[in-house]
Amino acid sequence: MITHNIRFFPSQALIRVQEGTTLLEAARSAGLLLETPCNGAGTCAKCRMHVLSGHSDPRASEHRLSRDELATGWRLACKTLVTDSLEVELPSLVPEKATHVILTEGDSIDVERDAYPCGSYGVAFDLGTTTVAGSLYDLHTGIECAVRGTMNRQALLGDDVISRIGAIRTDPTQLERLQHLVVESLNEVIDSLCAGTGHVETTVCRVTCAGNTTMQQILLGIDPSGLGEKPFAPAFLTAQITKAKALHLNVNPEAEVIVFPQIGGFVGGDTVAGLLAMHADVFDKPTLLVDIGTNGEIALFSNGRILTASTAAGPAFEGARIRQGMRAVTGAIDRLWLHQGELCYHVIGGVRPSGLCGSALIDAIALLLRVGLLDEMGVLGLPDSETPHASPQLRDHLCETENGTSFALARQPDGTPLVRLTQQDVRELQLASGALRSGIDTLLKKAGIAASDLDSILLAGGFGNYIRCENAMEIGLLPHVPLKRIRFVGNTSLTGAKRLLLSKAELVRAERIREIAEHVELASEPGFTDAFMDAMVLGPR
Ligand code: FES
Image (cartoon, rainbow, N blue to C red; front, side, top):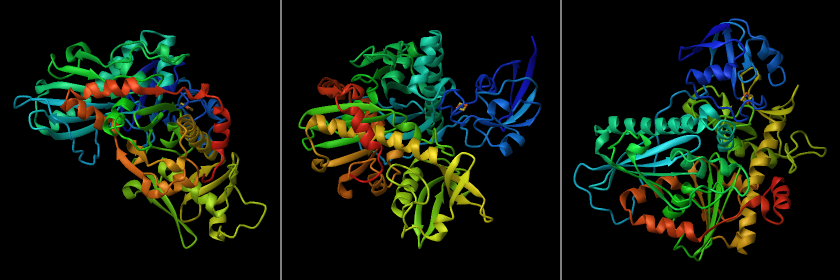
């Protein structure tokens, strides 16, 4: 058997692999987290790596990378087979081990707290497909001590729930591995919370956890395969309560772990927690709750009726499938605007831009629509008729490449594009926006409510906090309503988990929400396909 050494930079992780292993498999074996939205199909180009030394055949990467990139050693990790010992650099936008502080709005939780003796602590978790956020509470005083987050290490086996379910369906032993990976992520957050506040893990005596159906089932070691085919039925609906020692969580072994109830399909505990946080069971005015994460979850509630649905809206807004898309981290353009005909942008961290995140993607599409360099069908370029709004400077940003028309969002002083929006990126945005908007329209139609009757639109999740609502409405992502009716409500899944952490009586309300919530399977709704096609058209409505 021929083997080769692969050293990854900047982490210097070294791994010995058999000849014929893909670079992606080698990186994952070395414990490196990569974004792989297409899960190795060779279409997203997010697994790009830079081969610094050693021989690697460029041919398998030819369909996605330019001649210049191939000549300078760039390869698609999922398609490149190891035939030599290599030194490989991972682009800085690939997250490795990332424990970071989560910004919160300083939630004040208005519940009647359970009584706990002094020195008792609890952790509330939002268990996301991509990230895990945890909040440490002093259960005696009800004071929040710290909030931390990290990447969900399950990303080693795919970026979305579908690929993780697929991994388990192909090889049932992967369930144990995925469970182990998510427990590792939770423990990483617990350790960080305790280390940062000087508390000992064994003083943590209650844990609550809110995630989508796939994440919750994998955490509990329950096979999620049923979610991968009709009728997309979760393995459980009511809340699950277990002991920390059963899950190997790094807290008091006897600590109670409460996992949220689930509604149906991919609408799980995170949505129940969000509805709990927003008091959806008692709110009487028509309200739309939209959480744009790796999956997009929508809930419409009014007068005790709750309609819920999930859509595959998130990946494009999180940078996946967008050629230079990235998460909202250092180097990402997160805001774009026009000033006196000139394109202006803001880069997170004030560094040279290396890509754009979802909020800037929405800005860019709205801006290009406004000046006429993009039409409502999503065609990028100079229109047939004269466009009075696009200044000569703006038109100059359009360029033709081997992959079609693109628009330079950021350029070097000599005019060389640094970050480009491509025609294919616009198509991806239309698909994501169409998926979310058609879901919203379908729920509104089912409830017999016009968008103009909505009392408020609540935007949840990290991404929701950063988008410019006027631009989201201008491209048709959100229904056109007076701006003041749109509110950012932060991480409602985590807020709901905190409520349950402080008061077990909230479990009765969570179960009540689960009972009255209807799960709408969008693809089975009459007229959904037409609604989706209509929602792909860009423009306010
Ligand atoms: S994971 Fe390699 S191209 Fe998508």
